Length: 318
Image (tube, rainbow, N blue to C red; front, side, top):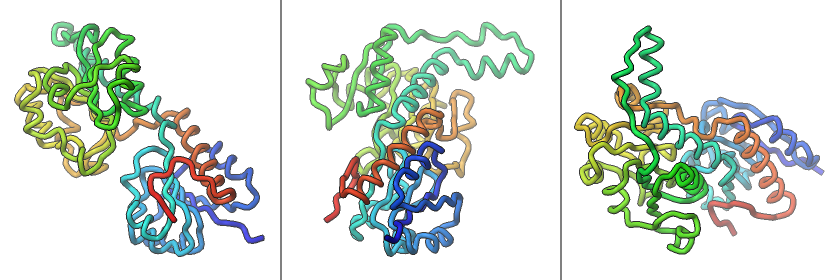
């Protein structure tokens, strides 16, 4: 029997490679960092494509995969995949929600601590040989209100950690019921109440037509002066120029930013701002998370191709 070729366009863990290797019916081809034109050539006889966040599975790339049946994202976000183009071709798109949730959640919590105590600026001053103790008077998280925009896998983790630290947690999520929110120990609130009353606001929503630019100049104008913003979700949910203006005006005291409208950014002004802790989209960059998502997507793709079993689909195919 002819083997089914799976093309891996971004690096996955050795455990994920081994998981694919359990199925003799599948033939794995790993070539990372390919330009779109070269990737298109490689996909001509592939039935499966595996990507992380680097490879853009555009309409053109998907169109070149004449035999494609499934695209697997080793991670949660699928904004680098043209899901509509895949659906038109009857190609299933899978992701791995929850596989890197702990890693992303812990980064958001780390951002909150670092912002509250100005850790990066204090560290930089020490490395410069300056003992500037008086310049770094921070705040405690105890007793503060955390506003969560989205309480899926990651948002729920962040909220649970915040409760353990003695914070009050408000949550806005139009897809979660009040009973579910209450069971998590959070208080369900409107978007306006969350942004108007929170001391820290952490974003944990996908980038969609409804969430794109949701934190803009109008939203920042309604926030408490001195609020902290954390975005470890997706670039484009926060309007970067408006966040920069809010930092300059003092409305936002500090921001933790892991994701950007364009990655890497064309304009580094926000990332270089002295009251911004900027990281290069490392929310899922832990060894544990990469093993989790790699093994998960290998199992899901194998289950679909060999058994017709669909796990964690983000689109529907006939």
